[in-house]
Image 1 (cartoon, each protein chain N blue to C red):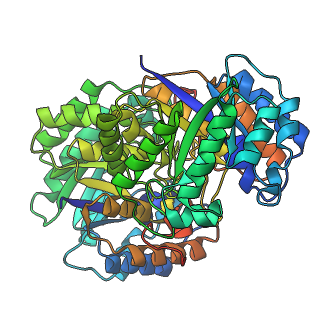
Image 2: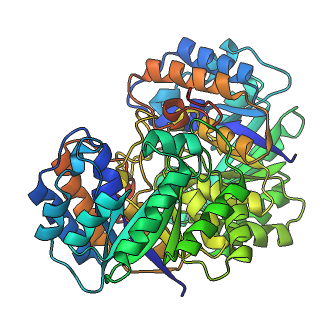
Amino acid sequence: MKKISIQEVAPRDGLQNEKEYLPTESKAELINRLSAAGFDKIEVTSFVSPKAVPNLRDAEEVFRLIDRNPNIIYSALVPNERGAERALSVKVNEINLVVSASETHNRKNIKQSVEDSFNRFKEIMAMTKMEKVQINGSIGTVFGCPFEGEIQEERVLQLIEKYLDLGVNGVTLADTTGMAVPNQVFRLCERLFTYFPQLELTLHFHNTRGLGLANVAEGLRAGVTKFDASLGGIGGCPFAPGATGNICTEDLVHMLKFMGYEVRPNLDKLIETSKFLEAHLGYELPGQIMKAGIISELYPI
Amino acid sequence: MKKISIQEVAPRDGLQNEKEYLPTESKAELINRLSAAGFDKIEVTSFVSPKAVPNLRDAEEVFRLIDRNPNIIYSALVPNERGAERALSVKVNEINLVVSASETHNRKNIKQSVEDSFNRFKEIMAMTKMEKVQINGSIGTVFGCPFEGEIQEERVLQLIEKYLDLGVNGVTLADTTGMAVPNQVFRLCERLFTYFPQLELTLHFHNTRGLGLANVAEGLRAGVTKFDASLGGIGGCPFAPGATGNICTEDLVHMLKFMGYEVRPNLDKLIETSKFLEAHLGYELPGQIMKAGIISELYPI
């Protein structure tokens, strides 16, 4: 049985887009419940400007409040040196850098050019050299940009190379606004592995157009073993009102389990925690397993 | 470009599960709009007992009211001889027979054994011998039964053989309650084509657990070129309250188009018709493209 590793991103990518602010204590309880469900990695928060993402303004407090399981990597998104300082002050296990493959999207999202982003990453690498922290490099809008449209595969290859030159431990390719289609995912991942056979690659999909799990299946076929997902499927994109968010963690775990893969998170605990999150957010989450039930739960004859 | 053929099933599989009865005139308008969008086949209704499926009690009237495009096959589901008589009286282009792979599900759904179902099909084949009508044989619960659980592949192969012995034109494999996982779909379809290389095979998926389009992608890989789908994704299963229904037609067409396949239905007309259906049903439909928009619709920079 092939082992698939899942990073839970609801506390960061999910909560950042919510209308309501989830209180710090509830965030910490959510993360503790996620830790108990058994993830390999949890993206806890984002060390960005509180003005840009007010929902995550309590980043340090959340890190201080949570119980850290030594078998789980507690990661945080960091766009610049100030963010890295803050992240190091609470001893995150991983810093997740982020840049967009699309120049336009990077300027809109991070307010700087892609080149400037990489200049800042170089500073961050220097800052963290003596620290016990691993670095992941994320690339957004890899499978399409809502402003520029198609992204050339060569562009993605170049950005991966830039990250590897910096010395990151792994790279994440993100379909930021849910524009990937299945054969595109297979094609790109297959090509990547011929250039970078040892790459620690994570795929990050959004289910905006219903293709999230189809894209995961194509990633699996190409040999990818690491995926991001968000509990209950929270994390809608501001550019697509009404559309669903990240791929749903419990739906992903359910799929992988019944496809015969080995996955760490406990499905019953995930469903329970998803219902806890739903109760706190106060609306019906897009996740489907929490409504339809697990395939193996049969009805009495 | 490989051509993929889509059968629209919202007027039958979709509407049969709705809480409210859609008036006959609205059904006819829906079907006329679907015809204008350009399908290869539309499943118009079901000739079953009005007591069993009150929503489709107007089957004959619907068939009489709609405009028939000679390039479209207007199909109807028929479980027994009485249904076949009714279907022939309004000159349906295709009769869609249905049996479950699961003995228990067949007894619950059609109130008879699988053997009895095939005895009735033999009578129907005799009744239709001199008529200008094609026959499709559907098999439900192929990828799992909510009562019995796993269905053996051998069982499915045997039922296909039984249908082919009767002389049907094509066979549909249905994942009635959304229990299929991607690698299972590929494995079964690949195996089928080695036994029945000429089989006119249609796959019918439900998105109950978020895997509908992932399962389509695996069917495509195995060489399947015909799929059922339901406008707006309507058609929930009574055994999974809150779960979504059939795979959504416009989401499927969108995926196929951007994967590079040739598909007949016009995406803009589908989205328009899905909004028309949503307005008539009075609640938010599960389809995602009608909310998120088409991938190629970019935002101004």
